Length: 315
Ligand code: UDP
Ligand code: MG
Image 1 (tube, rainbow, N blue to C red):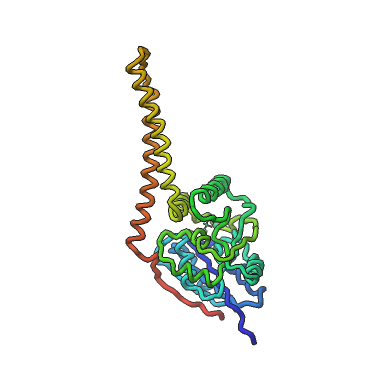
Image 2: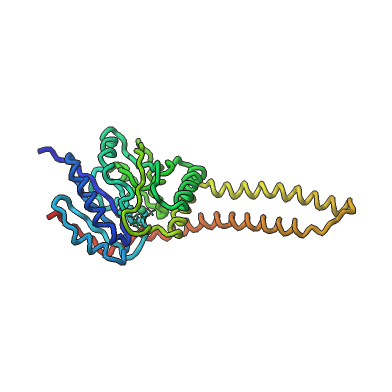
């Protein structure tokens, strides 16, 4: 009998008790239908405080091994995905959300592309059904800004839903950095990458686990970890406004010394102060983000702490 290749599902979840079983059923069903491969499920419980882990432990399927990795607290989605990549054994892995927003059946298409020589096959969202307008708009803006500011082309409208080859997984796992914006790192790594288009579904159940704070933090991670462009932008802004300031100084001196039309002009002063201090704050903030990145890198703490790791062998 020929040895079938092992492919790993990487499923990060945080308080997903409402949807996890439905999701696992779907993933198992799809895997079972793609018979030329062996499968394993690597599930990372990112510090859930609900029944997620209990449900996973009770979940029985008669086909595939399940690795359950539990974090000691909530370390965030990107770190959960990284843990999955660290522990998966497949010759390729598919990263997928636990809420069925990314359809598991696309695995077959991804595998086809992979077998045709692509090391990364990412899902590109062409339509996001019934997600809230604010999220769609901010995501749209974020991906465009990210591409403008990060030196490497990170494909627009892609999340972490993707298949990656072992070669890429190994490079990713060997990268020591703490600022983990995984889709950006994968772009940076290179190799042959391609996309498949898909419609992003509604969450099957439960609410989003990405709070506004987490979204902003992820966005800043992406924006400041890949290039110095934001810093350069701060420098250019400084130059740009200095030129205005310089012209302003000449004008003010001229009016004061050589004309009699010396007007109070408090509005102009106030606006100038507000504008310049606003811009200074932004520039200091950008600088601060980079210093913050150095701070975290230099501490060299692990990305996550495990509270347990168990293999639920298929029954
Ligand atoms: N998630 C996680 N840790 C977190 C937040 C989210 O592991 O701190 C998981 C979550 O369980 C889901 C995936 O990351 O499997 C995407 O999260 P979610 O669906 O809430 O985000 P959205 O699709 O709304 O952007
Ligand atoms: Mg989701």
